[in-house]
Length: 430
Ligand code: PMP
Image 1 (cartoon, rainbow, N blue to C red):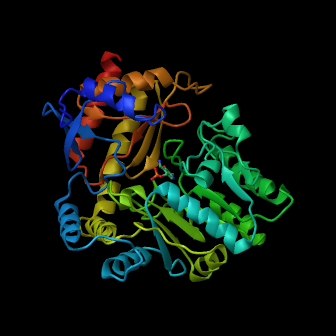
Image 2 (cartoon, rainbow, N blue to C red):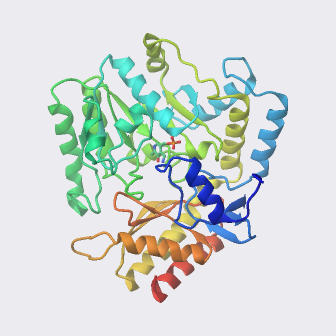
Image 3 (tube, helix red, strand yellow):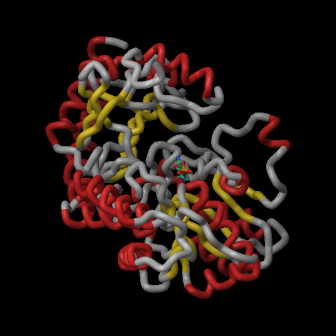
């Protein structure tokens, strides 16, 4: 009987036999999920969980408008993106309408890794140069080029020995636990400029998230991207923004992360929330940069921007607008951040609440001076939260930050439930 198994441990055992060990799953003893609705997940026992980590399902699980769009298009046509059909054009137009006018040309792919990979190749093709500067402690994907610029956790000698020589790094511009803290964070920009100028040959480009996601949602220091982008452009290089996590309304105040820094990148990479679990990625750039890709040969992605993907993408972007989800991210996110910040008064393990909108990170520490990461405690807290019906996971290089990125449809009541349960865990032990 290979159909539905309602024993999560047995299913996990089968999974571990057939999938690669390195392919991670949440939790040591995960419930077996069967369905989702808005910000909730339901397991095979009918137990409901509040999903506080899901920045993929940003319009909520099983949104009827997405389901309808997918099913209708699946019935009509789904095929290679090289045919002429209306959905891909309409979807690309909808995306460019959210962006500054110079970012007017779209490539569709199937994931964030692919989007970053293509963005890097576009910069290399445009400049006829290979060298890229990226930020340490970042994650950009698993493909060859997106992995090369992902320096998060990959300090293992095997990873370092296979890192290509066209990669250069600047310090993680983390104003909380980086080498410069608090007001000293203004030093990151000028120091990154020095690295860029000191490489000794002109660059193809610079890539970073426009809001530091891997650190748990730490805003880059004011003016950071302005300084770095100017230095890269002074050499004829391009500025690439990875908006895979932070773009598309989640930050509440800004639709795109780069707005927070007051800059306009040359190339933007997006994915994750734009597909709501369906594999959609996109790269948006100027016509001039896009055209230079010709020098590399063809570009096509067979299923990137397929009829079904494009209809799903259109539905999701439509929902974000029609349901005011960016506004909800701002409203519920601000309330949530305030309540989480209040916890730090009573619980010294709460070091800092990072982030904006519904992209928050709560960092647990053992010592307010050394900021020693409370890694084991964070895992224990997440496991206790699961018992209380809240899905929550650690993030960051030290796995000591709660990754608070619920679907953007989350209600204030659900957000309050999460904080109440977190406080209960902090109070009663973990
Ligand atoms: N960039 C960032 C900032 C990401 O967080 C991720 C995924 N965690 C990626 C790129 C890669 O996206 P994907 O998993 O869709 O390949």
